[in-house]
Length: 327
Image (cartoon, rainbow, N blue to C red; front, side, top):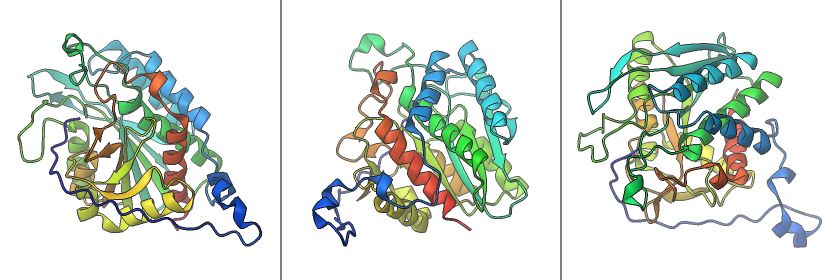
């Protein structure tokens, strides 16, 4: 993804909250997320890692390739096996370079009869070229796309597996976006419309059909080491209450080093189009105004060796806990 950045001054507001431990204060520094009482099932990072590997094993999931089709079949089958109602949404779609592809958004719903719903999304396609690689000779080569976007999809698959075993009080809709990462490197359009083609298509249909959800969470690059999920401008402006809800829960259950309360610039990601469809939505994305996106973003090094189970765990447990606290 390109994501136009409106760079804002970084305001490093880091608040340390002491753990409550009446018995042995000396043990506070050893507190772990596992010691926190959760209302959600335990997110299994090993399982999420396996789902990341399963996608990578198909090869780069570039639209129009055999790997893309095989992975689509796998994702549909897997979500159905967890008891979700699944459908593939899309139409012939033209990319910025004039090529035409069959768009394949994958929609999965749990408890579709429930009025109160939460939407969780991630893109599943791979960018066709490593245009951010340090070696210019690699710029036309595909890459494994383990983090961008295998990790977000893997987190969703593991959450779906948990929801199948224990239903939350609300309905949950998962959407896997296609043709998210096939945008023009220097897109100067106001809303960077060469990117996020899947969520743009979904947003038009959601608005037309009157789709409603309490809120939405988009996952993007949620498996890299030492990840920092800052609070981007679009999330803060269009869904401030949801930003506070998700980041507060992440901090409460032990993941303050990931869910940092630091504002960042304007990132036109899929959550922008979710908001356009009337669903107040936030982006959980590995980005910082100082260092930019995930270090291996759109390079040959975005591979399985650089996926961190701790980051998968922090993301998945926080989103699961957010879902299971809703009534």
